Image (spheres, rainbow, N blue to C red):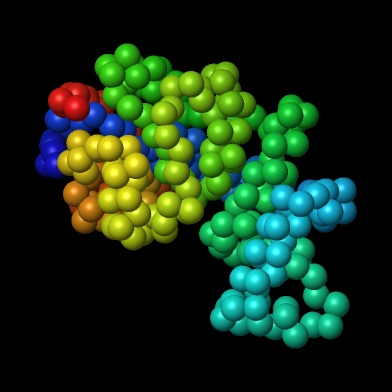
Length: 253
């Protein structure tokens, strides 16, 4: 891994695959926290009223209901004791708590799909991101996404971005079905799926726990120091504020 330097440029060598987080890495945290989550919460009841009997939605609701019965969170337990509590109320609680339940993430993706299709939602990528993605693709790097949001939500975000549809630039999409982002085993599993040695993968994220886990799995790591991200958390890793300051030297496959 490259040691942080006094100059603005971070250089990473021997990279064949680039694994990118989204929130705080390619897209502002504010879009997710202040636009996507509130939109899903506001549309949840009406969406379930219209689509709640569709088999895919029913399956997600059943998965959420099962998770609710095992949830040790005091707020979830208190809600469970209320006589008229619905699984929709539990999902709304998870949204408020920013919990990473896979069923919720997939349901949010379905709700966001309608918002994107209607032109209500559009993803504002950081200004340097589209050109960086295209540059890395021209270099021959394999680009991949790993986010706590569902794969469907990831694809929607890049399809409906302020720079247009960027989905063709990516070869792999990973979410919590591939494991928790703070677990080293998740990154080793992703390396196996991409058929790459961990040391040939560069992971970029704004979350310290994710960076630590990826490093423990043998990946190269760069911390995304975007507006609103913790500079203190970045101290343990090379960090970039703008991808024009990230020099990636591809390695052999």
